Image 1 (cartoon, rainbow, N blue to C red):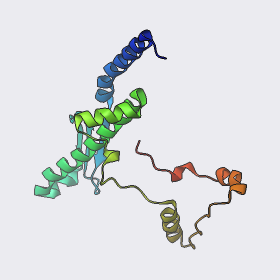
Image 2: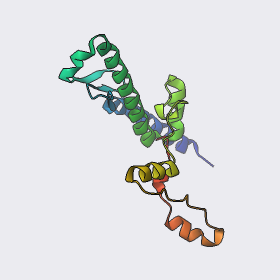
Image 3: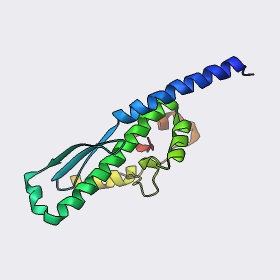
Image 4: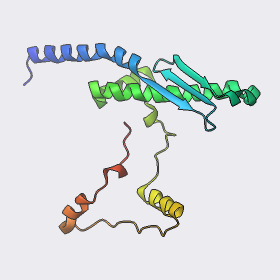
Length: 164
């Protein structure tokens, strides 16, 4: 049974953690660049442009330069937002961070419906084999429960994807 004193201590601990959220948000940033490497932007989690770099050849973009800068700054903002949520999640935990996302109406970019889930291990191996000019390796089969120890010894944690 939780006592009143324990509830008060928990509330104070949450309040102290919440007071650190602002400084974590201020410290978060994201950097993005365009495919051609002509525009690079760094933005903080509040959307403040911290750095903008343009290659000398960016002048050749003409009227496309403005929209390109905005597109790169928006990508940097998504990176900064995710960086901020990652830091807040370490401090407050996943549940509280998700609640903050819901309250602000700004979900973590990694939770976005259009987020690229990455590639599967099989796809990576196939592309690697094509690049190296070799035959792709056969997909590993899941061993029986009798051989479970061997399965976990060969398990590659890089095959997992996390939202954070």
